[in-house]
Image 1 (cartoon, helix red, strand yellow):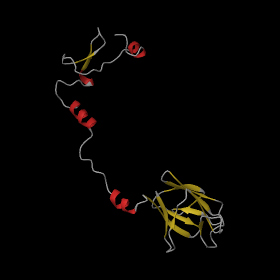
Image 2: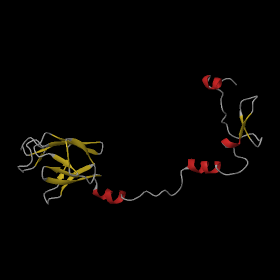
Image 3: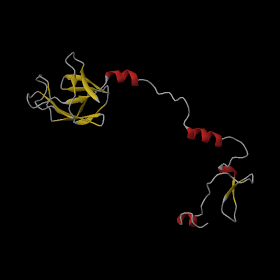
Image 4: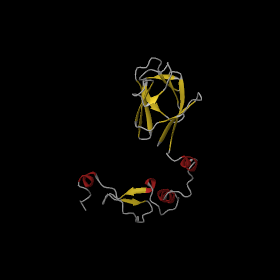
Length: 172
């Protein structure tokens, strides 16, 4: 997954290559060095995990903001505006291959309904041969459910009494 902070101020965009990135103005310590006096020496930390970005402010003087709200920690979503003091960036998350962005975009179109839905439609048909809950009767002698039409069902499913259910249906 490619994670990038795109500058909205015309500055350089920042690519987040590491899983844990320290942002600040202290050279040699910070992974992302931003040379502005409004940025704290250790400003914040960005964590990349499972396709998500999380941010935590490290007690910076001028704060870290997500979509204009000052935060101490939070999740970043694609398109969010992230600001370290007055340095503003747009969050970009996507596949590593830029060609995949164009290819994956759009709504998935289902050409045919899944098989299970076809079977449900047949059960909803108003033919006399189906066994629907509103057409079932119970045979008091066997406890089995039989269709109201009196014809035997072709289903292998039968309802169990409480005692049969506790015995695993082995009473028969």
